[in-house]
Length: 457
Image 1 (cartoon, rainbow, N blue to C red):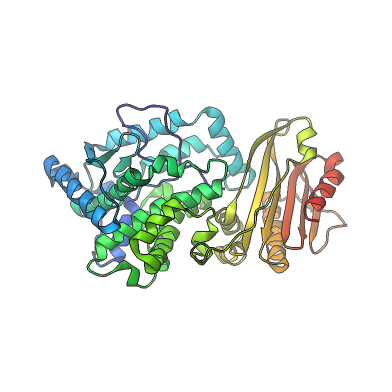
Image 2: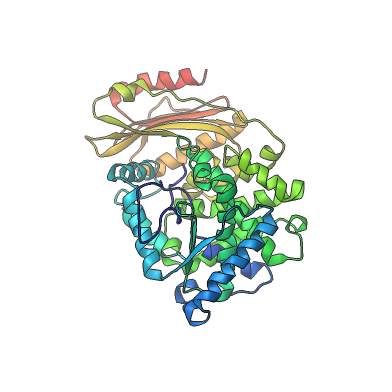
């Protein structure tokens, strides 16, 4: 599952419209600082407490700097400037007002409900979690300037100090070049029905912008010839984000998915640079990865390895049962399974088991009578042994989600059936597949068990 996250840059702060959807895009300021610390610039700043840039640098100088950085990023990436850069200065209150309005205007109450229900159903957040309230706090905490593909404008925050401003401009103006050459909004929204594919495209855009920013920082060294920066970057970025209280106290799912497009995206792009330079990276926009697995294991993409597809019909027992409302059908992907295993078990287990992911689908229902959820899920793994490891991990997760869960006598080494407060739970491993259902009515349990078994034959 890929959490929808604010693409800061879909409408002008003073003139908000309804023409853009939410997509994954965390503002880069925090990661930029972390990378600066790691990349010989020794920048050590805190955006939230920094004096306004307008006190240090005139407006005209900031706007001229943006033009210079735009040209520089074009030279680095090889992406031509196809239109003059529009740029404006904005203050903190304008940015915060924009973000709050964007969340409210681009998400209907039903859309917010579905996103919140998905998080609750998988156990990523508590039953009383308020997604809308959290998102407002999550994004306003980190804002530090953004490029808007809707108005083709770079909005330059007037408070960061010059050293951080340069990093934000380098990153965001690379997005401007992406937009002029590949239509960034269209690129990011191309896979609306597949969260994992959407997350992969988001990592392309962010990883490319990170690579360009770092190349500017480390020159005259060639980024392609440097050792992989991804392992170091992930740790330093996580440390740097601790300066943001909302981020550091957020559920694991949010923190893990927020860092993914920057850290894994950067590692992916560095591998691409080594294989074919910036022209190779341009080709990634034309033929983007379809899964997040291709970022965790870049050879899958660059060696053109094929991944299997998997289908999951709508379960008849849920479709016909009274009081069940289908909310969504989607894919967790390797990113989602790593988040699930990492939050409930450990990051080591997430890496070990999650890396064996090949394909998955799930269907989510809401049960009106019990104010709870029902899930049917199917996943395929690299081997029967890997599927068994995931089966055991899912059993552990279900036991944590439902402390009252009790097993039936027929449960075995690769089959679990039991009862929880919101209904029956069925989990099985068949060959290289792991299948489960939860929230099943007692009288439908046998039918659901047979249906799941039929899928894996």
